[in-house]
Image (cartoon, rainbow, N blue to C red; front, side, top):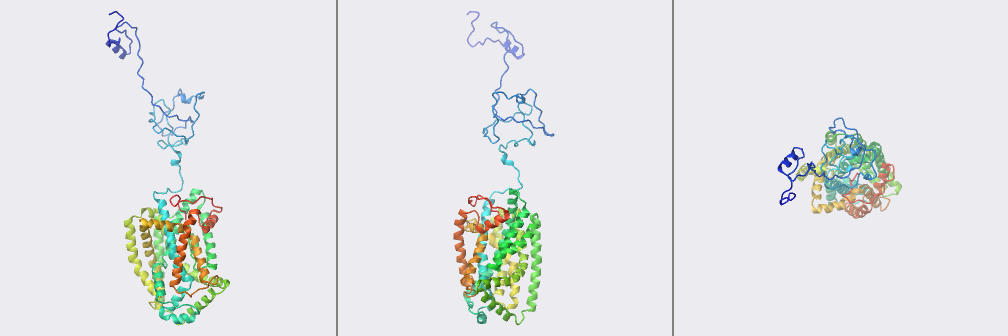
Length: 552
């Protein structure tokens, strides 16, 4: 073997050479090679995604990041010919980016997360994820709850209709004057052409009083207060001032209510909601607990005053000539509603002061319902309503409300003497919230079943255009029962008008679905919204129920 030949496996590096390399000194190997310095080990650097060049923001006083070294290439004023143009902030980034470098490395340190120039905090790649907004965050499941609220409003239209039809048809007036079937003859002689109520009519009158009277306008008031919070969120989202917008909305309701009361139905509720809505506007910043306490105190004071007045009427009793005077007024009213259009308008205007007095009594019930709806929206009651809690509400509401409502139906329907009539009406008003709560809880439980979901899809479109349907109900009934059309006032008893009302409601449900699939708002809702926003609403395609928050 020659001098330059090496055995297999010999690398030409002696152990001493290796030790010399560890000591940092170059030594001669066994083969006589000149001394050499081996290169230091190289560690591959991880690939990092390209970050667009941006000015370095001033460091936060509490930041622990060190300033960049002056020789760092990212600080060179000339980017060079091979520089990559900056990416758009929303440009796609690699899904598996390496971890950020240590703070003391020579890599470009990240600016402080709280720096004003920093586009977004770490671990949140999209800027839209943390834009701040005064609009409260919509909790999960809230869109489904809003659809249920639409369905509740659509269901309430049926109760409102069967109560109003007794007033517009004259059936309520005739039933109260007869004092039962036995007194029909006296009433029939006093009001020419009227039909004396029979046993079926009496049964229908008791059922309407027991199930519907005073219950559904409270449900509407509760939902009105609930929607107030959604309107506040809508104004904040649009950057509009809430108070002027709400005042315009209430003025629009007031104008619609006055026109409705004068030309169609004197028992209008829109004027009451418009006037009492100012109280809700003043209490818009109340806490949920404060709104609940105010509602409880208002209802309690009203209940005490109403019961004291009712007890006084029981002690005093009716005057001897009250019955004859009431029959004469009923006869004049029937003649007016069967007359010309001018007679109908004159009758409505003549009764309106009495209806305003009734609105004062209603305030003791409507304002607490407004405030309870406001508190429910602030606490997310529809999202926290567990089935066990709803079932308990149904049991308590029925146990308290059903007996008292039955007593009210007996007192106002002629089973008891006339002395107890006003007391029975007061008991019915005070027990109405219990049955209303039972209705709401029971319907929410039903809406969560398979048949209930189908009912929601049928009722929710009617709830979305409830104002249009409410006014349409009055228009149709005016054409049937007054001199505008057939003039059947006080000629059909009680059962027939109730059945006609149910048929009208079924027709409205059938029409509301296709309309709401084609349009975003009902015609009257669109008109009120235009006046509220003080501009033409932006045209938009109809949305599915789960795609938009209902703001009514």
